[in-house]
Length: 138
Image (cartoon, rainbow, N blue to C red; front, side):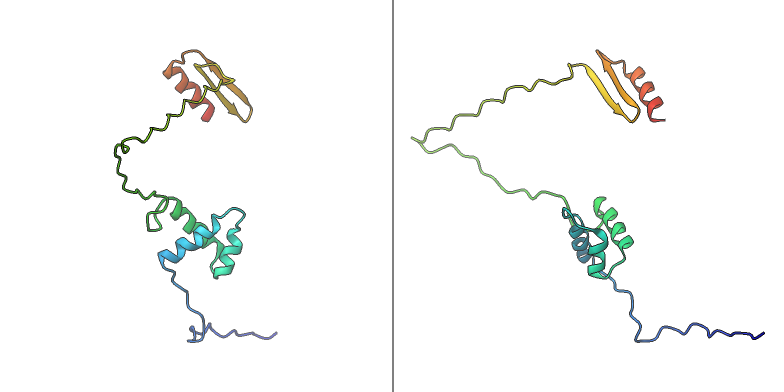
């Protein structure tokens, strides 16, 4: 019966790879790659040498707009409105599209639930509606 001794873990050598710190811009670029239609988070993460769980974490930050930059904002362009030059006819205004008839009559609330459909017709009392929704949602 022999005793096996295991050597203690050696401190990291200078040759071992260090963790790479990614800039916020680089994280955003990786996350935006994963948001493309048909993109796989695992494949994008692997291509950049990042753990997929880390990319999912960055995605959550990105969606909360906490990954720097003004993601999702629209740039405004300055516009100047002026009268048309004399002799230029004005373009006719487009007419409003015809109203689309809804299959649900006005004053109706329909909720599709996993176990069925709830339909409330007419004027719904807000207090009663709150009680019904609280019971349904738990």
